[in-house]
Amino acid sequence: MGVYLVVFCTDAVMYENFLKTVMHLGSPEVMVVGNFILDVYIYGDAMKISPEAPVPVLRVAETEYRCGGAGSVTVNLATLGAKVHCLGLIGDDRNGEILKEKLVMNDVDITGLLEVPDHPTISKQRLIGLAQHLHRQQLMRVDQESDEPISDEANKAILMAYEEKLPYIDIVCLQDDNKGLPGDDLCRQMIRLADQAGKMIIVDPSLTSDCSKYAGATVLTPNRQESSAMVGFEVNNEKTAGKAADRLLRKLELQGVVITLDREGAYVKTEKVSKLVPTRPRSVYDVTGAGDMVLAMLAMALAAGCEYETAVKLSNIAGGIEVGKFGAATVTIEEIADEIANLNRDATGKVRSLDSLLYEIERHRRQNRTVVFTNGCFDVLHRGHLEYLRFCRRHGDVVVLGMNSDSSVKMIKGPTRPINNQDDRAALLAAMEMIDYVTIFEEPDPMNLIKKVKPDVLVKGEDWATKGVVGREFVESYGGKVILAPLVEGRSSTLTIEKMKSETHSL
Image 1 (cartoon, rainbow, N blue to C red):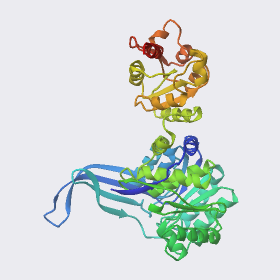
Image 2: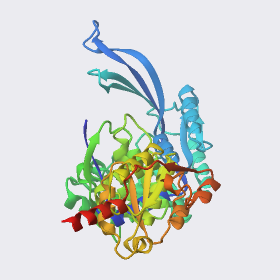
Image 3: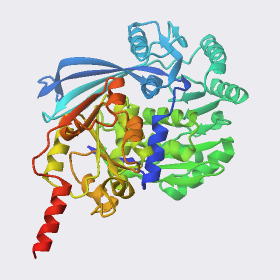
Image 4: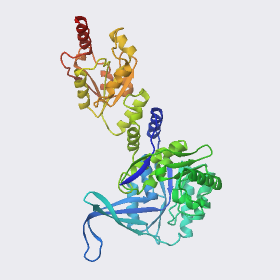
């Protein structure tokens, strides 16, 4: 285990903006160019040492296939909701067939994956043992790839497919891992064609001292080691990262540079922005595939029109989730939204504005969670309220409480009410574990709020059976349920207040 850094929001407004952004990234058309790799995970029990050599013996229990390299970026994008078009080379072999099957399962376009008979599909086999009977531990990696340069015919075919697809896509992700594709000339041509077509192109560079082939790209995303090699000095802190980013921006005529700095976060440089994005630590299980996830999220965010700083913050959040999983794993929009919510719970709490509440409900609905709604004044809390809210919790996954404002309570209860003001009432309700969200409404009844929340379950006390539950017809019109909760006899705010008054008079 280790530490990875993930950005977090510092206030409620920023939280709401982040959540709104991540829930509305859309489905951009993205072309991923690079080396598509088949990752093979061979799992087994490493219970003894071989008598033939001082190495562990792995008893194979399971074999798993995943998409690696540019394929990892592709499935990450598809999971985030993008429409992805693959462009690369694979071999005419079994590994290539497996890789294509895995990509098709993720509903991506593989017509740009060109088979080259004398160019085997790149594969990485990882032998995984159970470490200390608790964690999966990689014991060894076996790579299969060719050192032969890509033929002119293959390069021409790739470039032709690129030109055919370019008009129909929103952004290009070009991953250069120094495994053959793209070569220097092909890289330059792809960047030039993207620029001419007015398309953004994000380049994840290889470790090289000659970065001239990346000139004219929209964004370059080197890590600490790669940026150090490109600028000729060590990038080891915010100051040197800023210097390196500025040099790369000017030298290569880029729109943006994002240098990932591990514990220090990520340095973002554009004509308007030059800063280190703030981060905070989180636990790490496996860093495999983190860079692919960051690249995918960055492409999604930029294609959606996000500013660079916001795009980088979202990318770091996605990467932080990914490293908490084993191997190159995908991350969903729902997981990112949950992470944002968890990171910012202290800043926002349970008391929400209507807009913030609706974003949260949308997120929960995408996760198939049942939303329960109830409402009331909740002026002087008593045991009846406690049992009532426990009843609400038993009937769904998310409990939303609409609370009457002070002015609304006065309209209903009279000028002497409420006893407790709306901020105090909301704070007390938010402290109850049965409630997920509290929102304050101004109207005498909650009808408008119910129409916006559209709960799956509407709960009211059984005393409303004869009075008529506000919102019943609306909720039942779309298949929702209306449930009446039993009341605790002799418990109500009015009775409690009257008892307090009588005891005061008797003194």
